[in-house]
Amino acid sequence: MTRPGSPLFPPLFRVGKLPFALCALTLIAGLAACSSAPPLFLSDGRPTVQVQCAASGDHDSCTQQARARCDGAGFDAVAHSSDGDTYTLVFACRKPK
Image (cartoon, rainbow, N blue to C red; front, side, top):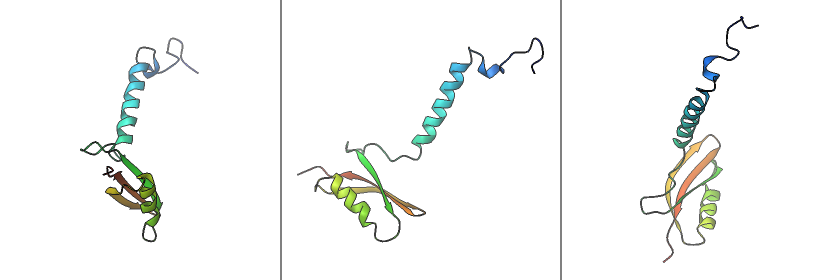
């Protein structure tokens, strides 16, 4: 179905341009994924953790998950949000005393 003399693949898929196109698409996908993720570390160096639970009720499941992850050291809530039936809590464990 190609005309004689026309390339089999469009110019984007030629060998010389393929690595550039793949790098550009990878970069765009990576930046899009990073925009909605919680921060990895707080300014004091503590890592953050994200947990999810049911949005209905008092969000006790998220609090229990945070306490369990912090092994009794306590935690500081960094961010929280609700999206439909899901409540998301981002927290950082306190440093043991």
